[in-house]
Length: 91
Image (cartoon, rainbow, N blue to C red; front, side, top):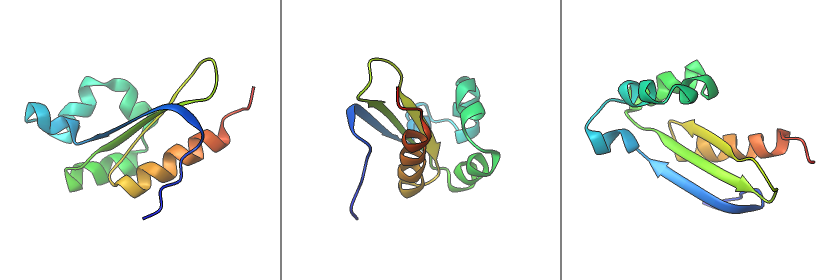
């Protein structure tokens, strides 16, 4: 698999953080309300069914801001982070 990412200063990839505390995806997301507002209902449902959640937080080469996405698969998270960076205004 070839991984392509937008230019960035820093990048975090997290896989299944909910399992650290022995909780469900649903319980984990409920502790972080921003997650549900940034994640589509369809993707959230896929995460619950798979009991998988991939998170990517990317700090682009700008003085401020970052992008955060979550998805049920690593491949989908990569798609979403690239879409977010592409759609962002270039200041």
